[in-house]
Structure formats: structure tokens, C-alpha cells
Image 1: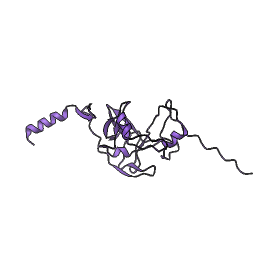
Image 2: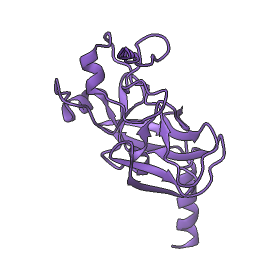
Image 3: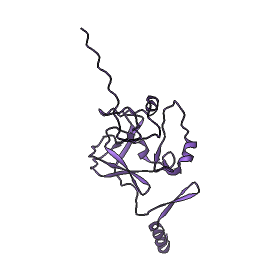
Image 4: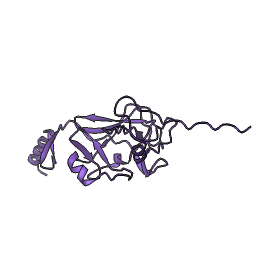
Length: 199
């Protein structure tokens, strides 16, 4: 690469980059760099399927990884990944707003394997249309990352819906579902009644 080409390349990178979205363009400010190089490992999870594990200590407040994927319209995602009544739900879609989602099935990275947790050690942060996973407490090497998906449905939660969105985190505070009430704080599952002791 010549000096002239190199300078032109730097100028091009310094401008706002654009991501092509089904015929539309979305501006992504160039100052928002990609995720820092925190060492992570994707492996079998005791919670569910695959999970993401820290390979080094992660301090509270650290930005761990960006949730990457193709930005697509909800209408397209709904057709691509139809919701089948009575079947468990599972996609790698991250909602940005009422119109757009990140589809990590396309151009996704390790962040798509981070499982839900009702007792999370991370949180998702939307920064100018990009999603970053940040530590909300110190994380030890070998610990699985997890954030609360906080999935809200427009209708009232029913036992059937909760079963379609099960949680496997195993936390003491597990609410048994990835869903949260449409309004207010998440609720914990009802405790099973104690059995009466035999006389």
C-alpha cells in the first residue's frame, strides 16, 4: 500500500461508517470501536446449551464484548424466524427498538452464546445503536457470563407463555422464565407449598 493509499484509507475509516440494512443505511459513528480484547471461551454450559466463560478476571464496569450481527428489520426477522405456537423459542435476535434487531445468526460473534441469568453478572448497554455487554460486578476466571434478557411481551403473561420461554439459570432468585411482566419489576415464581408432615 502506498503512502497516498494509506492516508486515504485512514481518512475513510475516520469518517462515519455505514451498515447496509435491507436497502436502508444506518450511520455508525467511527469513534465507537469494537469490543476490547478480554479473553473469553465458548463452551458447554451447565445452564443451557453453550455459554461464554471468562478466562481472566474481569473488573466491575468493564466492557466485555460487543453483541455483533446484522442489523435487520423486525418485520424481516419475524418472517425469517417465525414464532411457532407451543414450541420453545430460541433465536439470536437482540432488540434495538420497535423497528430494528441485531441478528447474530448472521455475522454474529461469541456474545450470542451468553446465556440469560436471573442473577446476572453482566448487563447489556445500547450505545448509539450498538450493544455492549458490561460487567456489573467482578467476574472470576472460569465463571460463566450471564445477563437478564428482560423479554417483555405485549400481552399478559400466562403459564403457557412462561413455559415457552423457560429459564435454566439455577439461581436462588430464578423466576423460571426469561419473561418479565409488561409493567413493573420482574416477579419471582410462586414457591411450591410445603408438604404437611405425617403424624
